[in-house]
Image (cartoon, one colour):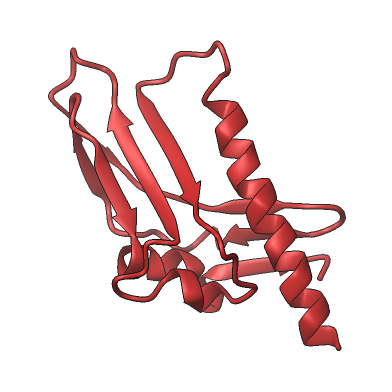
Length: 127
């Protein structure tokens, strides 16, 4: 029963995560890096389902919009917040840097995001 509850909570968290990033895209702020998150149904309650090779259910698309800089090196971090819980990347976890070229989108999905969804690299609060 507890596993079903965690699965339900995780599904809601993923929907909140996608909704949060969708709303951030329409903000009036102008940042040099644009991040889009696409979550494709059917949704799973298990993090490893989104990090398998060839899986296209969760995509992160990065775009450097600052055309005055030839490249940016960025590192990603994840944070999901819901009603009384938080799932976030541990502070000591530093993923591989991603080099973004101006105006060239980069898509990350499947096994590329495994480290960000691995429970060893995540802090769970309130669950």
